[in-house]
Image (cartoon, rainbow, N blue to C red; front, side, top):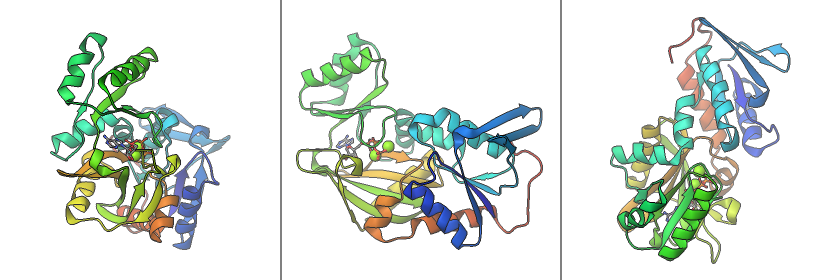
Length: 303
Ligand SMILES: Nc1ncnc2c1ncn2[C@@H]1O[C@H](COP(=O)(O)OP(=O)(O)OP(=O)(O)O)[C@@H](O)[C@H]1O
Ligand SMILES: [Mg+2]
Ligand SMILES: [Mg+2]
């Protein structure tokens, strides 16, 4: 197979590992900066160029689309899809995952456990909005944040109100959630590939911090998931429509709760903590999805 890896940085651990795993399994792999892919759209004809040259002949594309380039990056993934190239994660699913509010609505529809969440616009409604959630502490998070940035804990109602006012002043979209105190600053990152958990780690926040993200100083260890945790992680990835997903769970008194579903989960932390060759399982999944070669679609697939 000829596989395109859409990544802004060819020297990132995740990108390097995907290239290695693809080549080790006999495929061609090429890293493309999504912002250097440009598109031509005409009736029934989709074309893409890269740094002055025509791009073509790819069987599959692995999108690694960071939060800051979601609009452009998913347009490129969509163009690949229109050209009949198999996308590991589809453009629509990536956009769903990027929007935490939309993701939580989709998860709740499937009756998947999650921290109760509220969302509102008008300052006149803030008091009632917080009352809908129950007593503090509350977690306030930017709708499109990542790496724990823009996730805050408000111990008191007045603090929550202050943060909400500040976010509104910046025209930022944010959610307010119940704080799951019994998680004790730990979360579970479940790596789902093709409807199966291939690796899982527990991340523990450092002393005095409630966010378990590795970028916030969290420490990762391999973890054995319960049957219920496996089930909910796989179900959450499916509800968002992602073939590869990093599902974040909290262990709570009422069972596992999904925090979010990430469309481009990092490989470094999880491979280091678990010793699992996650990159190889991603490539194996693409092989199974694309099927035996040679086989090239010549007509655009319907969106
Ligand atoms: N409602 C909550 N109750 C308790 N802890 C929470 C809650 N929401 C978030 N956290 C903690 O904060 C961390 C970051 O939250 P979340 O995963 O929603 O944000 P993110 O910035 O998208 O993270 P990522 O880098 O994994 O994409 C979680 O991993 C968890 O440790
Ligand atoms: Mg996230
Ligand atoms: Mg997270």
